[in-house]
Length: 405
Image (tube, rainbow, N blue to C red):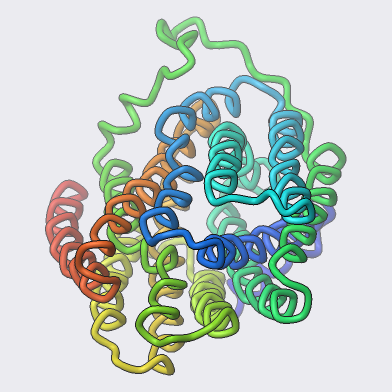
């Protein structure tokens, strides 16, 4: 395990992967600073729980319509330019929010409209971003590269909310959007400079449907291991993902907390994610990714139930640490299995299906849970989600491992 851990960390010393990792970390810190500020800003503007859920839906729903197009772009275009173009457009969104705040013209619907733009650009660029790791490491290192990428993402979950809490308390929510806009610049520069230039390969003569931009998706879905992984991620995103989305509502309504408590809760989730990613760095390549994904997805549902039943705020951070561990291990194991199994020609489409399950699931989960919160309250809504998540993962686990055998 120690040897595997050292070999994983050695990737950070390489010029291409190391530079990509650090630029991604800075970008993710800015993103999470905005993720803390945005729902809190909506609450201060008088937005309801449904509107907060609608904001998350607006940011993630375009995945359902456009992520397969993004996967085709990843397979057929220069991924560097795809990332640079759409991330540049996305950078304009926090800039617009800053301008609206300065001029005093900000309204909840404007934030939601800008979230739609973020969702569209994410759907078109994220398959290219997610499929970069296999181009920077060897096939045997894909799992470790993805675990390291998950490490930076979850480290940013700690640093971003912590920075956001300080900025909101000292300067207001606008400072978080300034940091978010600035964080795009180093990543866009790295995308154009350090990432490998890619010339798409011509379709093979023996692949009659190879010219169709979505060719191969049916084959991916017919593979039991890949289908099981995607369904596990989808169920987790729909039912457990709202725990993070509605953390500000839980903190404010159930525990009468403020922005510092909310940032503390998100940071705790990040700590758990970081611990889960670090644990995966020490995993051996022979470890069964299928059982790992399904087992931790089940644990996530149990943690959600416990969080809904927890009567004290100080019980929330430890539970969110466990939630972060569960989500990171489950999703990263599923992603590793998908990318290691997919061929180079179908990598973008495989990743787009993963993004469809994860981000698309988050969008519907947030919208549905937001409606239930308005009727039952945040505790009962999360409790219902947790019970359904446990039942779904038990059923999927039986089918999943049955197919695998």
